[in-house]
Length: 117
Image (cartoon, rainbow, N blue to C red):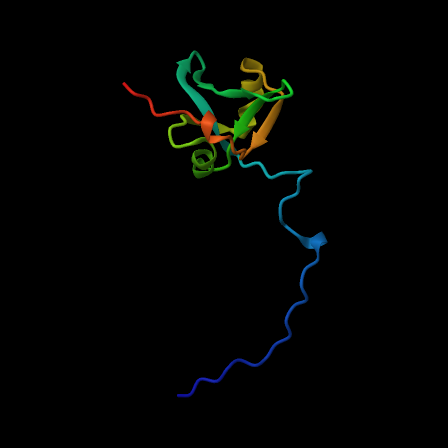
């Protein structure tokens, strides 16, 4: 039995930017759960989330769309908590923040170091 190549078919025209499903900076995709850096200290609500002060004085919540991104951006010793996105307003009431930064890399000198006990 001989195999023959398939008949040539017309290729679809390339999609323009208007059909793109890529990132939209005005409407970023936020998953149903985020990985948030934690202090490693429990509190009355469970886990205390670590907030960072920005140079301009605003308080930032760093949030990561995958645990490997958190590790890559904050280091392997950073405690974290999986947090439902729908509960971010509750978190903001308990630990106020001004801005949420997704998948933000921080300088290595600010990474948490391994606990030595």
